[in-house]
Length: 228
Length: 228
DNA sequence: GACCCCAGAATATGATCAAATTTCGCAGTG
DNA sequence: CACTGCGAAATTTGATCATATTCTGGGGTC
Image 1: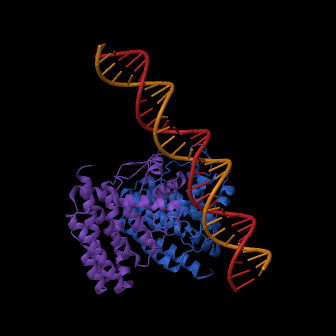
Image 2: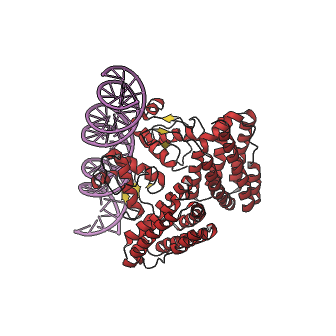
Image 3: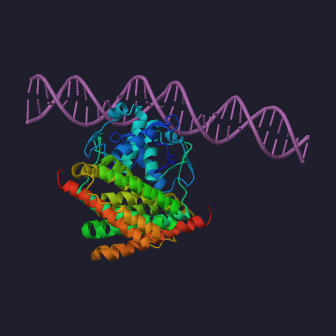
């Protein structure tokens, strides 16, 4: 993601090592990304200090970072909440995701090793399982994991960072869609991406990624044209 | 850029109204963007509390935000410094800026009014004056101002936010280049952009923007291939 | 309906604790 | 005798917390 490279991030396992504000940031980030916080929901400092059993300063800093990430919005009057996506936002997200994530797919295709591909296939298997069992949080987590792992092999930290930001923006809304329609409506487009990786065909990877992005954004768009 | 909409941001004019952390953030941001802080330079929280005569908490939050912006880097061991651009970074920045800023130019061309164009021409005039007088800080400020004002008319907050982030990344390095070569080496590409705007020709605007972006990035690239 | 007061939450401060880098001294060697 | 390398103390810096202050929002009263 941003700077934590070690794999140990299961809640507060090695709690003594990482600074508190970093731990709080990761937890809050995950909650937003995987939709545990609904769009429009208010986020208060004191609420989080109680919920996460953390001090006030770490919570403050985590909130600031997430506001800067676009994962939370500052409502002017000292209020902070989870953002609500608008149709105009979706248009921007489609453009930005297409260009950036397709390029990342291209770059990753060049650099990726056979072992990396096997790892991605493993993630995709877990993803399929989550879809078939209707495990929404699992689906969101594995889907994000797939993209993040892929982009990690692109060797493009700045673009990867931009992509991460975009995901934070539509994460909450995506969760809402899943809650309404379930996971069945998401045919898995990752198979095409994996095939392109195996063939080492950058343009095919970019094309497959574009379809995946468009589909995801279409789902989000549908979700917000339906109920609020 | 992120949430302050009012025009009053001349240092600490209405100092009593804005929260301290916001003021600190703006000041630090400007210092980074306009190269008052050199790449690689260490940034200490206590140093800033003394320099900006602010409390510790506001400075902390500002630093966190700027780290999230990519304007500062967290060196792992609690140290924070101004990032040094690498050739690989430049390649990424070129791609990202081309796609995003060209699109913003396209969108702005559609929405912009005649009055907005006049305002941009005024900024460009100031820019010319800064170039001819060798006023490096003025050049950087007006150049940034031109792009920001233009993107503001694109009506695309998410893309604008991404573009802002990219500027923060190469700001310090651009300053280094100016310090070494002066402002003379920057022919003003904005004339073409203005002409495209007047003609309401989105593709011409995008093309002119692409040239401007490429030129800027080339300068940065030259700067870091020369001395460190 | 407008105004005032109060409660609650966010902002900001300074103190205190923990960690890391730096520096200084000592010993061993050429 | 000078120089280099290691190690521990000291200083510098960051992280966290408890507390005071300020501001926003709501409810009650005139």
